[in-house]
Amino acid sequence: MTIFPVRFDPRSKLCAIFCASLALLFPLPFSLESALIGLFAGGFFVSGYWKKALLFLLIFVGLLGVNQWMSLSKTPVFLTIVDFLMVGNRRLLPTIMAASFAVSGTTTSEWLAALQKLRVPMQLLVPLTVLVRFFPMTVQEMIHIRQAMKFRGIATNPWQLISHPLQSMEYLIVPLLLSAEETSMNLSATALVRGLANPIKHTSVHALHLKITDYVFMGSLISCFVVRMWQK
Image (cartoon, rainbow, N blue to C red; front, top):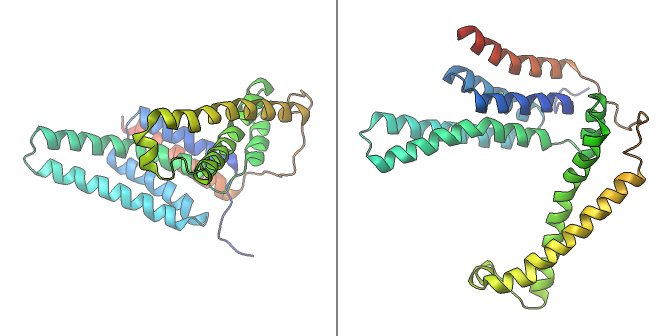
C-alpha cells in the first residue's frame, strides 16, 4: 500500500478555496501567510504535483525578495508602484494556489458528487455543472477554429491576428460565439436528459469519504484563522 500520492476529497479542496478567499479579504500576518502558502504547497506535494509546489514556492519567495529589496532601498515613485504590485500579487497567490489545487486531479463528476453530498440545491447545481463543462469545450472549439483558419491560410501566426483586428473578429470571434451558443444549449439538454434536475437523491460511481488527511488539511487551514482571531 503506497502513501503517496494522496487523493484529497473535493470538499477539502472547497475548504481550501474558502480559506484562500478569507485570506484575500482579511490579510494575515506574515507568519500565518507563510504557513498558508506552505499548507497549499504541501497539498500539491503529497498529491503528486511537486512541480507545481516548487513553482508556487519560488514565486512566493521571489515576490517576497523583491518586496524586501524595495523596503530596504530608497525607492522613487516608480519603484513604490512596483512594490505595491508585488504585495498585491503576493496577496493573490493563496487564491491562485487554492484554485489550481482544486482543479488538479479532480474530475467534474467528482465535484458534482461532492456538491450533492453538501446538499447543494439542484437549482444551483445544474447551472454550475453546465458552466464547469462549458469552458473546456469552448477552448477545444477555439483550437479547432484556429486549425481551420491555418488550413485555409488565414492568420497563420499571432501577429496577423493582432494586425488585422476586423478580420480576426470575422473569422475567429464570430464562429466562436455561434459555437458557444450551440455548446451551451447542448450541455443544458444533456444535463436535463441525465436527470440532474430530478429532485430524487442521485447515486454516483464516486464513493467520496473524508479521510484523515482531509481532516488534517482542513483543520490546519482553519487553525490559521483561529490563530489570527486569537492574536487580534
